Length: 133
Image (cartoon, rainbow, N blue to C red; front, side, top):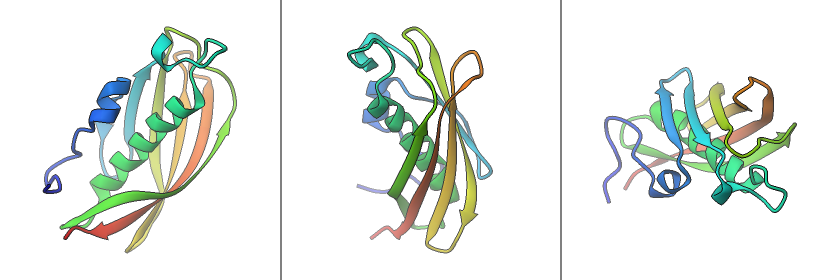
C-alpha cells in the first residue's frame, strides 16, 4: 500500500459512518456527520464512540495535511470532554486546529458542534508523524 501524496486518503470506515470532509488545509480541517439511528446509543442520541470516530478522522485529516513528504500519521492519544448530546437527524461538525506542530508530533484541538451551533465536545489529540517505509 502506498501513502496518499496529494491529499487525505479516503477511509472506508469513515465512509461507512457517513463522515464528509468539508474543508482541509494546514491551518484547520472541518468534517461533518449526520446523526442516524445506526450511530445512536440506547438512549437514542449520538453514541460517544461514533463522535470520537468523527473527531479522530478530523484530527487525522489535519495531521495528514501537515505531514512532511514521505511521512504518514497515527493517533497517539486523545482526551475528550463531552458537553451535551446530539439528537437523531442532527448534523455534527468537527473543526480541528493545530495547537503545536513539531518535527515528530502534532497536538490538535477538535471542537464539535450541533446544527444549532452549541458545542457537543472538545478533544485534545496527539498525532505522531511516521516515516513511510
